[in-house]
Amino acid sequence: PEEDVASIRDEVVVDQAVESRAPAGTRLGELVDVDFADDALNAARDLALIDGRLNPDVIEVSVRRTISAWAEAVDGDDDALLDIAAPDIVDELLRPNGPQTRLVIRGPKMAKATVSKLQAKDPIRVAIDAKVTGVRYIEDRDTVVVVAGANDRETTFIQRFILQLDDDPDRPWKLVAAGEMPR
Image 1 (cartoon, helix red, strand yellow):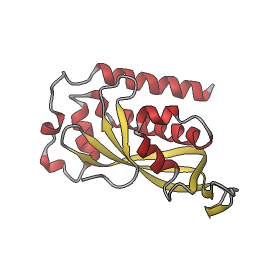
Image 2 (cartoon, one colour; image 1 turned 90 degrees about the horizontal axis):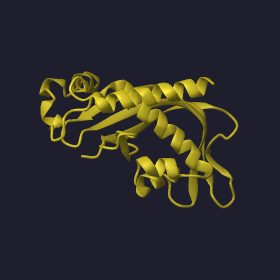
Image 3 (cartoon, one colour; image 1 turned 90 degrees about the vertical axis):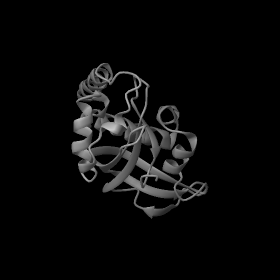
Image 4 (spheres, helix red, strand yellow; image 1 turned 45 degrees about the vertical axis):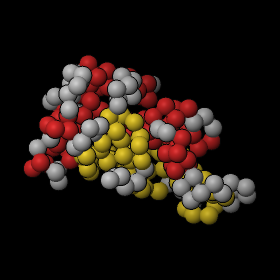
């Protein structure tokens, strides 16, 4: 039941944001004050006054959904992850060291999502540093031998996600990279 309430809350947050989006054709990137270049969170909050999809709460929902889809894709269905990311980005998340290994993440819980950078050109991109706790390790795909990390204990780590604003009303942010902000 707690998960259902959180899921419903997330859906409402996104629905309200999409309803309060800027009119079509608005070039949001032109509206960011250069003085905010080093303060991505404030820039996002300012832009959220014009387009609710830039509200940090909406961005946080998108990150939570990304982490959930990532964990689901580790052992099976990657449709949810492919709905928000291109296949090469999915491969990067699931097999960051190449096709011989895979990154396993189990039971991830996001403690905090920080808007660390906002790229003020259209389409808008944000870099999010997500503090996540869960079991995380890399294993050999053929032998299932753990080659990095531990499969028997939780760890806390920071995962960077680069999200790009999208017109999809159900998923206003798409994952375009996991790692550093592309230039």
